[in-house]
Image 1 (cartoon, rainbow, N blue to C red):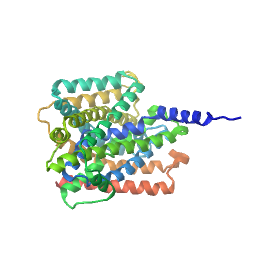
Image 2: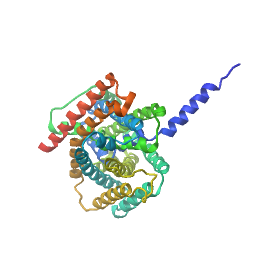
Image 3: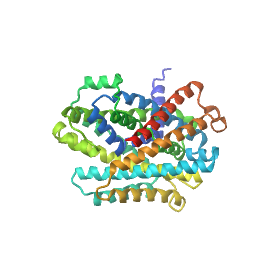
Image 4: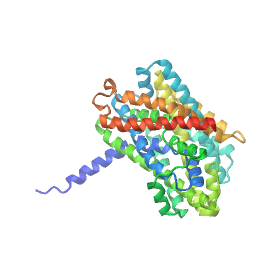
Length: 416
């Protein structure tokens, strides 16, 4: 007897499972394309054209590897990264890592609210009422909403990153030159190029991302039985994130670089696109900046609250009320309020704040990645899910390369 509907039914079941697990990889990776990230990619395209596109291939690979290890540790151990660090290493070392992460995350959160202010100003709206409204919306979404509501909103924000794809296409780039830039590595021996080269990597792979994705899969309650779907989603998130970055670089390379212009920030890139690619392309770019800034302004405080509460044993979780998890929601609230208030300061030196955040992240990232490698290879924690020898070689090379580049970022920024 024929049974033609068995395979389609199995396919639908797998699709439903994948959609139910969707979130950690895609949201964490997309949040890396925040206001600072968009500014970095925009400057890369404006100053050096298509020459850094090949770097995105390496970043995609490295991002997928590091995020997969974090997600796997969360699923297997049922604990966040900060909690595992506290258990395996000394409390003083944990406190140092949390202090450095807090400084970096607060600086980055301020830059996200500054991105919100800049994007609204491009549409003619004053930051003095748009930034507080955005802060209230973010606070209500997390503190008064539920886990499912917050996750769905984050996924909606992630979908709006496609505006950068449209903006890049409307810029009418030289696709042949873009393809060469993607497939043929190139490098320039000058300080400006090297600093931006390292910043492109540093803005995508972050310490807070490692803490957030692990805490996220724990809070979501993903089981090891379904981890293969999370692993696929992590890979998808890395690809989608860097595809968005590619179109940001392409849009600025095809317009600002070709015309011989220069920019310092993402909102300047949106303004520069008007005479070169049309008002609609500029508005899409500005909307993308607003969307990215709002998403990251919610995720960064969440990552901070998750990490600190895990490190010191406080209750945490979006589904817990303010009364059930006062420290968790208190840290989240403090981060949002501080970020919004500082962003309202007139003539805020946003670039200096972004550089401070990148420098602290550059110092912290190698330490966090070493912690990750030690924990993910500990059978007492991971059991049979430790890294294989082959995977350790790949992950070790990725971690080693990121350590060298992160240290170069700190050194180059210091001497600059």
